[in-house]
Image (tube, rainbow, N blue to C red; front, side, top):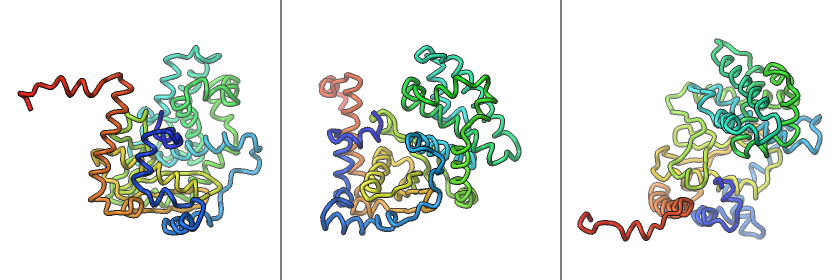
Length: 336
């Protein structure tokens, strides 16, 4: 159960804790006067008023729009990371997804064939990235198999491939045919969203501020995994390719970012601001943790994270079948 799954589950103790850490934010965008006032306080109105400048291509039919949006979002994340130093295909979640399929290919029809084609695609991506000046459209094309493999890791091979994607891969004779047969609407959608963000990426690369791609956190294991998009200095950035921006969606996304921040229980990343990068609206919105928590983050974070670490320890112990009371009882009093 990932962090996002916890935050969607109204019975989750993780959700309850994260939402209680920012009570004013929890009311923003809800019905009534308080919801409106707090939505304005957190600048929701600016985001809901944004025009969608790069929409999903009109050629994508309604039944395919959700799947298109998911793949395009993951592929854009990879495409952006290709622009930053240190990107390594073998260190990605996509690579882990491919290895997951290769470890048990018989769970799906022609699993070995599919795994072989995806291996070819990722190998081709690796070689292309080694070129001196690869064509931007080639990189956009290669970001899509990476997204497919990440979906395998996150949803499992059966769920990720039991649809048009699985059938499309099966029909390909080899890796080249698979890559060149990628839907043009998807390819150009990723390329169009990427191009306007290049100056921002260049700014990040040109500064002395460290940039961490796909960061994880000390508390991630306890919630079944949690990895964000980017951390730039003290700024945690999440990329969202959503077309329709609503107040409830903004609120829930900010709690996702706050959840990542609290999972950084040892403050390894030094997060003090969070940002939403909206490629389809060409907008980056930033909030300080002081704003979200409603207090001085430097003073509030240690206590909040300490309590959260206790909750995460209980969750992890439950998953492992460990009784924390027994551990306490077994301690040697002479070593206290």
